[in-house]
Amino acid sequence: MRPIIAPSVLASDFANLQSEVEMLNKSQADWLHIDIMDGRFVPNISFGFPVMEAIKKHAQKPMDVHLMIVEPELYIERFRAAGADTISVHIEACNHLHRTIQQIKATGAKAGVAVNPHTSVSLLEDVIEDLDLVCLMSVNPGFGGQKFIHNTYRKIEALKNLIISRNSNALIEVDGGVNEQNAPLLLEKGADVLVAGNFVFSAADPIQTIANLKNSTK
Ligand code: DX5
Ligand code: ZN
Image 1 (cartoon, rainbow, N blue to C red):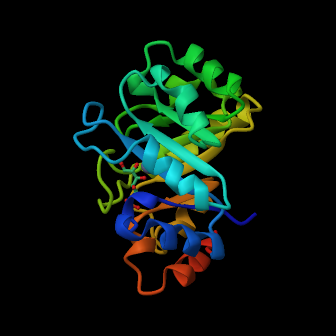
Image 2: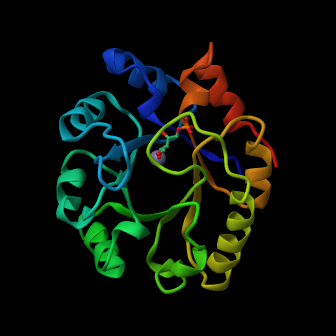
Image 3: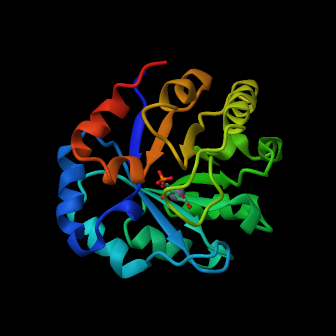
């Protein structure tokens, strides 16, 4: 099956957000990946509700919202109202992850959990059946344009085994440093969703670059 491609709007030209979103509408992108950073969970601040709502106004594709914030449970309903179709919270930011997953589902959004490079996927053992998505961070979150961490391949394999053994429907998303070179092996290991920021938006032809990622083969 062809991968789901989720370009990260973080790497787009914020001064021309409407045309960037329209470009994604025309492209083979499947989702828009929306990175929310609070300056506390990660050492960077991206954007919040008003910008998300502005994106939503033009987006013709689902919004995949990646919350890199502490206490995400305080804002789940507002992110849903601002247009999130999938909401992923970080396992490292949740004291009551099970409850937060149920809270996301109660809004009607799909529920995802993101894990940092140092976090073992085995920690998802007791929630994997409830998840629609697991976002494996292949860089330390906080910034676009970083170098891909190789250990991610091993984590995809471990997560895939967990998903199969528990009969879970969770999709495996890989986020950070994804490009045309590493995409084939990511897919071979079991990735379903590829997030790409800089690789797409700094390309001479983003539409073609998205098509190339979409056509990556195992
Ligand atoms: C990193 C973000 C990523 C980032 C990906 O904290 O979660 O989604 O925007 O950007 P690239 O593809 O440039 O690494
Ligand atoms: Zn992200």
